[in-house]
Image (cartoon, rainbow, N blue to C red; front, side, top):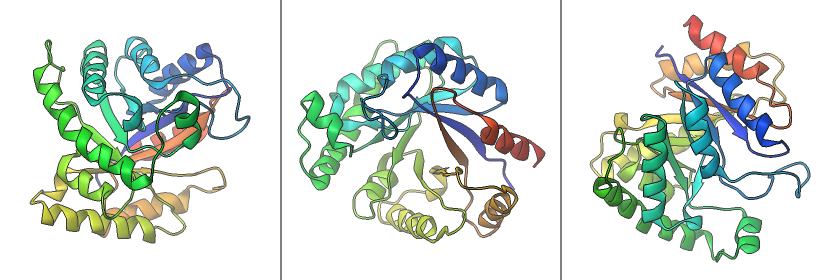
Length: 267
């Protein structure tokens, strides 16, 4: 079994920035491969008006306080920034981090962000169409910037829409992120099959796209069966290349993440 990357998803909510910064440093020390935040303006759970921080300015700080982990948003909302600007921001953070940025992007969904900050919410289809228009603009701008990114920045697309999101993933992405339920992985397996079909339609080698999954581990008492499921998935031809585990402030507990790192290292 190929060793999957382990990622910590630090939700930038209900914490001081000092606590967020401490969490990303602790996650790197724990041996994770990647650390993500998310791109929202308000907490997604808990007190809806609790403390919260903006994603991309945070990533610039993470680029300075870490040395080995890859960093990024899981995921950036396409609606919040001009695509040329987003490409420039990504290039800048990639240079600050010496080539450790992952550019995660999605079409957006959290209506409060839109209404409070004055963005047009529109329909899900309209937001996805906007994403389709933005992706080639981002790619083109990345080729024009001086200085250039330190590497070809990996593009991660999050979501599971079978008509548009997975089509865009097949065309543009290096990574695909979706939720994986260890108790019932049938939905992920179906979406993975659809992605393969889209790759065939657009003449893309599907092995070029790594699979990243988020796992909701809050109600899992025994990780043994989860590890067995991951092994079975790899043996069945559906390998998972990255496992992402979320944690929130103010404490940012990393116990489960450390358990996954230990398991991964044992492979």
